[in-house]
Image (tube, rainbow, N blue to C red; front, side, top):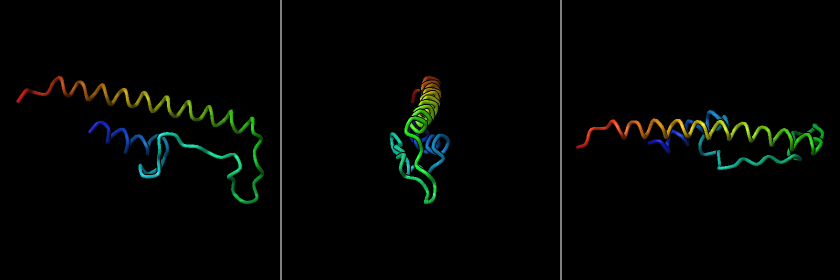
Length: 81
């Protein structure tokens, strides 16, 4: 159950996409722009994307840790059958 929560809610919360559209890492190409827009400066693009990825995946890691903490607490408090 914890894996499903991380996959489904995490993909929406951190990527803003449906879980079927999300992979482990999301790669963005600098030259894939809308028609009419200029290609970005490589330094600006890579610095921005690196910062965005660090922020996004550190938030996702904290989210996964909190879900795992809840899972362990539930398992500890579950009565033996």
